[in-house]
Image (cartoon, rainbow, N blue to C red; front, side):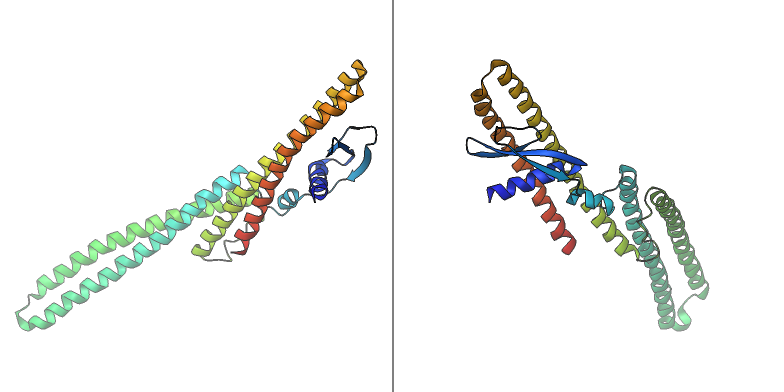
Length: 259
């Protein structure tokens, strides 16, 4: 089981190389992988370029530039405000209708005792007040729609994959953007830990190469075996931790996409 995990780790780490020689060896009972022969009986493994899950995600446009993410974040707020402006406009229209009906009802109950001029004045005042509110809501809505159009254009210039303007309503667009932002956040974490993996491997290789040179100068191969086993064990622990974090993030993304 440990061998399989470490083998996967080695393939994962070296996937960015077009073709690399990887040496598998066992030092003091610790299985390790390196770009340099780490023991006399090291076994060379040729690893050809492959595409990691992370790189596949990039190709599928699950990872976007900061410009696109910034525009999407703004677009999400604009879409929410558009929905609010529409509801507000609808509310003012409903209130206008309700208050006019209430005045008419009051006039009908009063019959001839009701002052019709006062009724007309009240209707005019109420209509003027709500018409102004409705117009303000419409002006706000027009500005928001223009802002939405500008942001959609900005996004399309950066990434032509995000074409949802004609396909979904506002609420669905907001949910779609939420999904994109969440996926981007997870992929950003994956990239961070993948960079850590590469750094660990580079440091491991450098430490082993330096140790080997020291061992050759001192003509003490036993020193190399002992020290390299400790170094490899330490780095393998860090690599395994980062790989486990990446695995958990991948599982979180799968679960999120299936919800």
